[in-house]
Image (cartoon, rainbow, N blue to C red; front, side, top):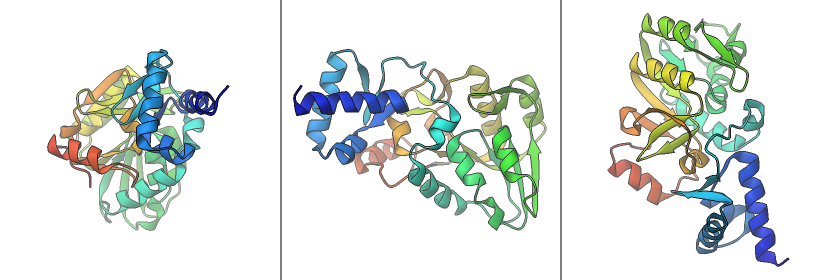
Length: 251
């Protein structure tokens, strides 16, 4: 087996482990040019081993869902960077919403620096993270819990949100596309996220660069419905320009 085949097998293993891979990660991880990385993905797609997307590739099945604790170990530095950026949009006295997800969990870990904050979430793990934080009022929705994501969703969660007014929501997703919008794996979670976004004056999409090369099953809404996108520094200028031109600015 030649070096090229070994590299392509390694790329496929990374896609299987994470559900997707971004072009920039192939360039950095395997020390190849962007043209070589694109060619590798083209060949892998021809072999029906993956599906190419804008900026990367996903596993051949869109139904692949990476468990929460596995995702916590992926792109941790990028998620910390996003969390730091998100804090710039939060101030004392805010009422904020946090959907489930690993990126929003990293945001939750940093909220103890505020003296007066109300946090509304449908994620049990985020609620556990915030319990006992001084100066913080915590509201957890009801609903049915999914062990893959620790999110509460369904009619009970939605009914709670219908009675709340949120200043700023930070929303995590499983996939992002200019044509399909913001996507997630579970239908009930998608509806609950839509409800939280509807009840919010501002909604910030928080997602690391890998999410922009991934698709998923259920659409939450169009990216243009958000106030803006908060991502990490690995997002390419070309991708930023494409989203800005479509009315979805990176912040």
